Amino acid sequence: MPEVLKAPLIVEFPFTRSLGPVQSAFLTGLRERVILGVKTGDGRTLVPPVEYDPVTAEEIHDLVEVAPTGTVTTWAWNHAPRRGQPLDTPFAWVLVRLDGADTALLHALDASGPDAVHSGMRVRVRWAAERSGAITDIACFEPYGSVDDAAAELTGHHGRFADPVTGIVTPARLDYVYSPGRAQSAHLNALAEQRTVGERCPSCRKVYVPPRGACPTCGVATSEAVEVGPRGTVTTYCIVNIKAKNLDIEVPYVYAHIALDGADLALHGRIGGIPYDQVRMGLRVEPVWPDGGRHPDHYRPTGEPDADYETYKELL
Figure: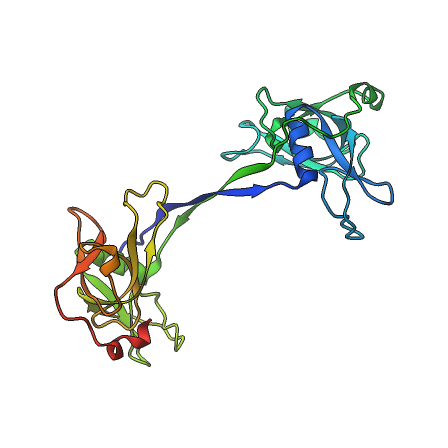
């Protein structure tokens, strides 16, 4: 049995968003070691604050300070912290109802072990040494004293700041191990030999590249390997004008759908060896393999006459 391929895969991008007046005040307050909630029409104080009442949908904007101390309402022990989490040693995830608030805030509690955590315990904020206006300005919570200690820490802040935070950038990242399965493993192994292999459906007889192990049209399993290409036809394309992070390709460049000869499904590929504004539908191309590469670096024109539209119109 051939080896099943697998490899780590990371999907990562920065998520940038602007802040409304309520979220701006909340995050700016954290930077200044002040915790702000928002008061609803019926007198509830919501922390973290929102711009619309979750019960009535009424717009709310009256800011009110709450204490950096509170009570754990529920918790769960995290015995193996992951990358990017608040603490790098085992800790508890806790919902904390801060003194003066009617809702709970989710964060980490630095505790010696699960036996040291219980609902109803008193905790307080441990502020980060360097703060920028983000939820991470609260480094974590830590065990604290009694309810009587809370009022002394309030400053009576009005929620207005000279230099408010107006936007945040949150990195989104997903780490996982990908296994392509039997059909795609065979396809990838063939690419390492500078060949392109797909699979033919036993029912409709279409050849799919890259193969998925089943026909997307008929829903039946595929197993017959078919070598296609190496040449193909550009069916449609786009011009890329924004440089991607960690991708050493100068813009503008062209990314295209390419129908390889003998295939009934177009695949993606970059077009090189021709000015970007000369790429066109019907252009005949061939793969360019880098030394030791496991897949084509790009496709270049073959010099053949353009393919007739009727030969690839079903593969747009």
